Length: 188
Image 1 (cartoon, rainbow, N blue to C red):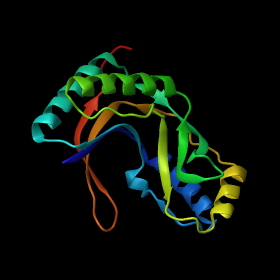
Image 2: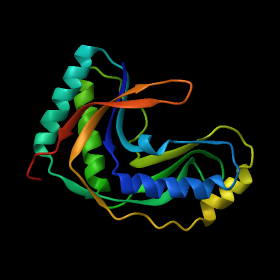
Image 3: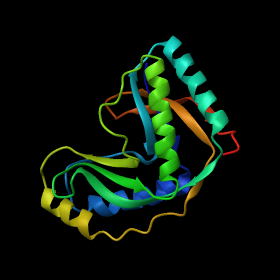
Image 4: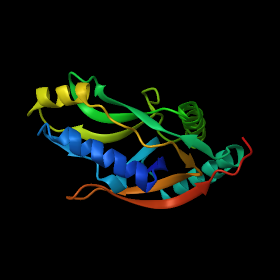
């Protein structure tokens, strides 16, 4: 099964990001916008894993969650990889709580290495992907929108769990299913 570890977003945050997507879509650029129910903060993409690996990942997440208390997380900055001038991935960066997410992602990476999971070659970038550019069509208009858009981010929300998701790819885009929702139960 294809899987990843993430922080799910509450409805009000997904709705705010959907409004931002709609504003950017006015550029008419060739972008595949992430469906609002699929918006999340990826902690680690696992790729194809076996059922045994799934159980081991879930156990690793439970151990991590026992040490981590719930915390506030916010989104703020609009950006693009590799840059706003040459966007391929459009994202919103994390604000409040970013350091906690970074620390947990590093712990997940170490735990994944102990389970012989594929190591990520790039440094962790705390963000929510909102769209992927498919071609250069209307790229200048998109770049202008990325640079000029004034966005009012939603209020920070309380993160209370980490989720292990299964991702099934299909013609209509990916479909995500929560395999495990692991509550953060530590004292901080």
